[in-house]
Image (tube, rainbow, N blue to C red; front, side, top):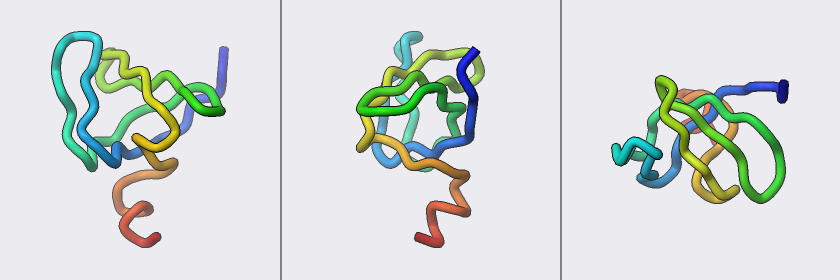
Length: 63
């Protein structure tokens, strides 16, 4: 299984369920590279590198 890490959405992103998650939402990220798999409460969000930042919302605010 790929390593998981916390991430934060930088833009609104739709999940497979049809729910759109707003910027600042904490996600669990799996994978590395140009695209990753992200999850919010089991909902899958296929993200590109520019749609999220590694770390939690308070970590992102410090950047």
